[in-house]
Image (cartoon, rainbow, N blue to C red; front, top):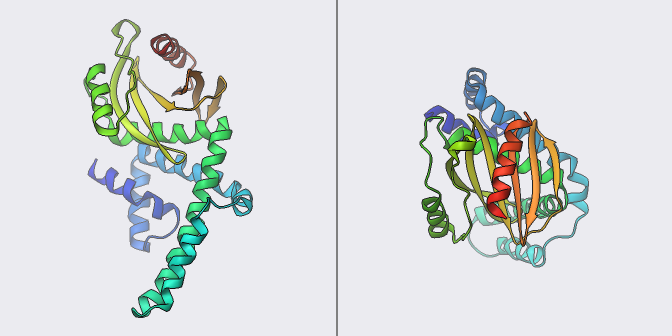
Length: 251
């Protein structure tokens, strides 16, 4: 597991080709011997493909208010005394910040509008969190304790559907995952031995949708001012069991 965690930490620079040849070979050797990490790497590479496909709209989209002026202010500081590092690095940082913020802003807007992008993003989170932060032998969690933890750690007052032994549903974890420009609760279940995720997007309303993304089923629906996304293996039965139970719980 230690080598898996190190691989996870280096996965982004590995996919971007920024590691040294030795580090690159170490990652490739581990991916060749660890199918779960290889799967995570393949899915992450798919996310980068989405960003490349969105490159043209990203270049054309307007920047968030005030971002350009802040970056230009940083760039102007290179003229002040302070040595070569100011003259060379600060403009580079400003350009990098500008490009990154533009990409994130446009990708966030696209995710808010596209069910497919939303499902792909949350499916990647589902795969990542179960691989790195969950054990098949983990005992079920108490739902009230999970709710208290989410409230204390992140200020989220959300209802966490509890385990249901009669349905083969066990609550096994909670996480915080990125969504658009913020974060959302990620509740993790094991349904008849299969991993299932429930994501809650508070203050968001979307139409009901069922779709397949990256080989997983995603069911999207809204109740009041909250949108729920259930990610399950593409088997039909597991997703149906989990969706029926969770939808009854959140109504």
